[in-house]
Length: 367
Ligand code: NAD
Ligand code: DAU
Picture 1 (tube, rainbow, N blue to C red):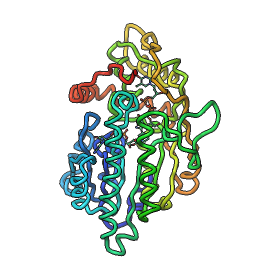
Picture 2 (cartoon, helix red, strand yellow; picture 1 turned 60 degrees about the horizontal axis):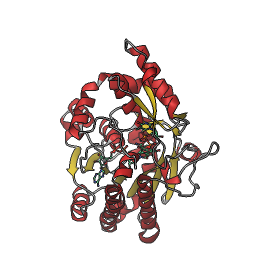
Picture 3 (tube, rainbow, N blue to C red; picture 1 turned 90 degrees about the vertical axis):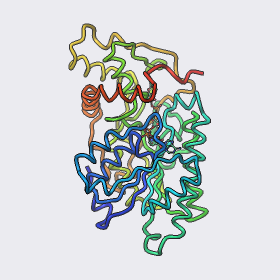
Picture 4 (spheres, rainbow, N blue to C red; picture 1 turned 180 degrees about the vertical axis):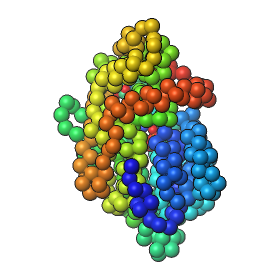
């Protein structure tokens, strides 16, 4: 884990995080509360994918000092006036923009929601932040930053060879990735046209605790525990480049505080696996931990493929490693085993969040 306070400066900084009630934003908020003296504003519309349990646990652990440094601002970025008011209230030195609709399968069923949140929402935030930044004092203006958090999916789909890097051309192929690409372009345009000091990062697939059980790893764990069929899309040969969420948080803090303005950093953890390999590793860990009558392997079932399913993602993270000194700490199978243990110990939370969202792992995203 990186030495956080030295990267955030000695004096408390006001940090506005959007999407802090989500999986990655939550990990970032918890890290900043625990390991910095920053004042953290969490702007989130609190959607089906949101949960504040992890943040509440950290606040309870740290006591009133941390309470005073944290505020939830329940706002939808689609509401331009409310967004402006939020930015005015937070009066930030740093904005880290993670809020987005994030699930590819949902973007196939309801692309409009993705356009609203990821494109209009990002536009509203940029406008609000630009107003704020232009009115800052000279000193604060000089150190202000807007960090946009994006995905490797904007670069499209790789064949068997090669990896994405900062020069890869944009080629989004799902409604989700098209809206993320649009938001990347907006951020870049606000830098070139208005001079807004921005940094962008594009990361590969994250895994770890508190991920909403619609994404591959928690879906597989819960299906297996419940003895239900484990759905493997297509032939299971699609490749993702997995990164533990805490390694992503390390990279985000480095990029936000030390990254070159107007620049992009690609983040990935050398964790390429086929979906079949990921599912089989989870089954192996579960077989070792649970005394089930039948092996979880017997539940693995090939199901119709995701429409437009990207074949392979892989990141070359050379730039952030050499220029910012980032290094992923988690080896994939070790991180996955820990994640399986976390879900087994937090089945009650899974039940709670699935009931709250009224989503129980049914197949979505088939045209
Ligand atoms: P998530 O779905 O778990 O959380 C997203 C959060 O954003 C939710 O709490 C949601 O309520 C909030 N949000 C969405 N639309 C909003 C709006 N209009 N106004 C206010 N809040 C809104 O997503 P995540 O996995 O934590 O991803 C966070 C960011 O990181 C996203 O921008 C995503 O594109 C990017 N990313 C994710 C991954 C991954 O593997 N999960 C990898 C690379 C990049
Ligand atoms: O690459 C970064 C992206 O990773 C992020 O930008 C997205 O927000 C995040 O959701 C993730 O997108 P993916 O589509 O890669 O993640 P998902 O967990 O949905 O699927 C991972 C792979 O597993 C993908 O190839 C589809 C497959 N899959 C998924 C599910 C839910 C299955 O085979 N079965 C399943 O049940």
